[in-house]
Amino acid sequence: MYNRENLILEQYPFEVKQTAKGRGVLICDTSEGLKILKEYRGSEGRADFLYRLLRFLAGHGQERVDCIVQTKEGKTLARDIDGTAYMVRDWFDGRECDTKSREDVLRAIRHLAGIHSVLREFPDVIPDYLQIQNNSLLLENERHARELKKVRNYISTRKKKNDFEMEFLRSFDLFYQEALDIVALQRRIMEKGQGVSAQENIYGICHGDYNQHNVLFLRQGVAVLNFEKASYDVQAADLGNFMRKILEKHNWNMGLGMDLLKAYNNVRKLSHKEMAQLYIRLAYPEKFWKIANHYFNSSKAWVCGRNLEKLEKLILQNEARESFLQLIGNSFEFAE
Image (cartoon, rainbow, N blue to C red):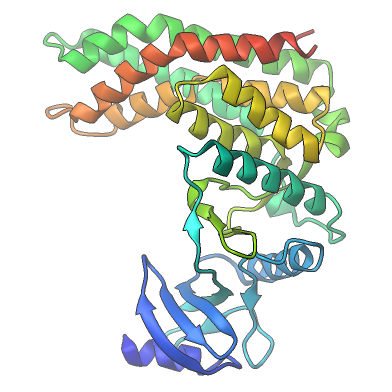
């Protein structure tokens, strides 16, 4: 493998001083700064698009992103002797966003808003395979609701139920009704044509995986990494994904939740329709579905105790979660 890595790195216009193994990557100290080498499984067209996207960000005030480095031949991918594709990207030495730090998460939210603002100005045509259909989330939530019911029906038939299964049945009606309510709201929005007519206002390029692990704090500022899942979607998806993970770790603290919204709005103001989309993403019981899905796809003879712990924590947090959702829901007209 050592020889293979060196053969790949020789295709690049820099000198490698030292290498170290990272999680699934090779970290390289080079004559042009830190880089990482990683196997790439996507299409070359997607890699080329990502190269242009990251260069655009870097040239419009977002200098600290992991830009793709081209080979000596000007290609975004390098290949080894068996045709396996690899990508080299810029890298940064910093600390991850601390989800326990109010200052860190607010700073990360403001940075996300800045990235979204720049991405809305990206001039290239978005490839069809990167565009999320406006009914994709509705179809996904409908499918998850059916899967929840399937898990409930399966557990109901089991004669000897463990603690997790008993707790799941006790809490099922509450979370399943939440799922049905959000699906009904999504259908109303779709029927009124809001999902289509608002596309140019609420859609833009999303990071696709904006979380604490992909936000680094450096002396020079904030670095954002791993744009591989970038897509053209409702940008509130990035915001909702980040907020949900942070608020779950803070027991859905209402003050923190509103501060997160304010921090984003101070950089890039959300429209009423974007707030509706954010509400949908926070209000759908995604965590309950994930717990149920993990249980159903694992061995039923041995149920991980973590499943029960996660379910009990979710139930304990739900009142605080509902209070926060009611607050932001009452602040914006979206249901009718």
